[in-house]
Structures are given as structure tokens and as C-alpha cells.
Length: 469
Image (cartoon, rainbow, N blue to C red):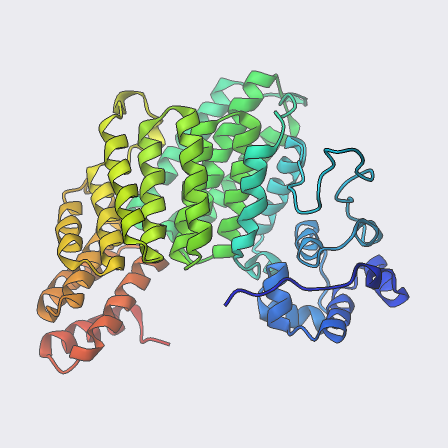
């Protein structure tokens, strides 16, 4: 169900009790006031400001909020006017009243400097390494992708990325970040996002932050440094997504997109927008997934990389399939095939090497599966298994997809046999998505639970992954 935004009259923010709570950063008092004014529940407030209900409850019970990032989320979610923001110690949305015919409306994106992005990233990485509870309680919000995507298209050209820091940053430092990213990406594909997620966030905090904040670099070097940091931050977001830490994943991906913009890296920007689309569609936010996929496609065309265009089209197709728009889905899949046929794989970025015929077949399979076109889904799911064996997590996904198709076709024995292969691989992984696909298969097979093969297989799932909660 889509929730209306919190409706707080602007003049209510000038009440004495509210100003007192804002000045003291008494967020618990602020939330209690909102409840009394609007009747909003803790869940409703949490949905508006991007926090879990349990965390909202603890704040209302007296827990302090000190993170500027979370305070900004609360201010944005409550649509605080500038007077309220400055009372709480936050920067106003606009520094001067808009005048003239081209004045900006409050709903338009606020442009930030690359230095502000670096400070936000450093705070995120530090908080993630220290496992701060406030980060763990940040919930995913489809609206949380709106402003970053709009900034990507509407923000002016970034200021020069140059800094007179203490330590010289050059190509060796940038090459090291890229080499470490390639290693971490290989581990992610082979063992799942949970295997090295903490290691990646620690590397960002301990190694990349000092380069960004204390380094000395000219504009050309600064852009390459931001691009390398964006690529690693995108991987960290992908790992968090794979481990079902969706709010943290969203923060990593949005900051990675801001870094890519400051770096002038359209190809990486398209990849990050596609990752955002992937996550949104996976979580059931198909409209947001569709919008982000189209934004990725527009950016990919600007970058002139057909493989990225193909990726954007399959993300678009998946969102359309989830929305049950078969005709538009088929058109997007056709465009993806055409774009991939035009691709010159020799000139593409190294991080795009995963996108091949097997990956494309898997996405086709997911689309047809979502549409209930099981014959097509089976064909493409089977084809997706002709893949590079280094992508262990991808193979587990594809096996689970094929098993799910067979279950949907009323072939439980076949589904169990293939599902058993997926289960064997999943035991080697730390991937919430891989576990989720097997749990979905277990649900599909529930109507056949009297069959010996189904009883044995579902029993193995519970014995291996633990009983369902």
C-alpha cells in the first residue's frame, strides 16, 4: 500500500514546544509531537523518515540521535521548512528565498558539492565499520532513490575535484583501489556478499577515506580517485543488498552515484543506476525499478556502451514483467538483444565482464517466469547454466530459477533434483538472496509435501538453512 506523506502544517513548526525539541535535537519529543498532531503510528513515522519501527520506538523512549545523516533523513521525511532545519543545526534547503521566473520548487533536488559527498561517505563508512545501530535500523525507501537519480540528471557540472592535502595521491594509489575492488568482486561472485562485506567497508574507511579527505591531487587525478571510490562503494552496496541489509545498500549506492557524477563517469553511473533498479524491483517497488532502469538506459546511451544499454533494457524488462506488462516486457527484451549484438566487448570496462549470454538468458528466464510463460522460462533458465563456473552465486540463482519453473509446471520431482544442486551451492555462500530463492521454492513445493522427494528435499533445506521462522 502506498502511504501518503506526513502532513504537518508549515506554521506548526513555529510552536514553542517544537522549537524547544528541535534546538535540543530531542527527536523522541519531536516524534511524540508528530503523533499527537497527525495521529501517525510509529510504523508510519518510520516509513516517512526511512527508519525501522523498532528504532523509532527506541527514539521515542529516549534514545538520542546524533548522526547528521539520520537527522537529515528525518528532516527530509518530515518536510521541515528551513527555519526548523536551522533550529536543529542543519543547513537550510535553500540559502536565499527563490526569486524570478526560474525559481526552484521545494520538490526539486538539492545540489551538493563533491566535498559534502565525501564527508557523507566517510561518515557512512565509519559508522558501518563500527556497526552503529543507527545505520542497521535505516530502512529501504523507494523514495530514497528519487533525489539521487534527479541529481544525476539535473545537477550542474561539478566543481573541480582538487585538494591541497598533506599526502600526494597519484596513479599507484588509484590502481591499488581498483585492484582491491577486482579482488573483492571476485570473492563476492564466488562466496556471496556476506563473505567480504565487512572487509570492504573497513578498506573504504581505513584506506580510501584518508586519500579522499587528506590527499593532495589535481582535478584529473581527483576525478579518477572518485571514480575508483565509487566503483568500490557500488560493490559494497551490492554486497549489503545480497545480505538483505537494504537500507545500508541504498546509502552506499546513492553515494556511489554522487561520486560517479563528480568524477564525470557516465558508464559507472549507468551501472549504479541499474543496480538501484535491480534492488528496487527485487523488493517489489516495480515503478521505481522501471524509472531507474530507464535512467540507466539514458545514461548508458550517453556513455556510448551498448552492453550497458542492454543491461538497462533487461532491468526495464524485469520491472515490466513484475508489473505484468507482457508486451512492453517483450519489447525491452528485444532491445536488450539488439544492443548486446552491437557490443564490442574489447573496449568495455572490466567490471562489466559478468554481463554475457548466460546472464542475459537468466534475466530472460526471470522475466518469463514472472509472466507465467513457463515454456520460455524453462528454455532460458536452462541456457543460463552454460556459464562461467567462477560465478558460484549466479549458478545457485540460476539453478533455483530452473527448479522454480519446474515446480510451477507441476514437476516436483524435477524441481527437487535441481533444487538440491542449488542447495549444495548455497551452503558455500553467504547470500540472503540465494537462501530466499530456496525458501520461495520450498513454498512452491508445499502443495506436493506428501511426495517422498519433496519431503526429503524440504527437510534438507530446513536441516541446512534452519527451520523457517
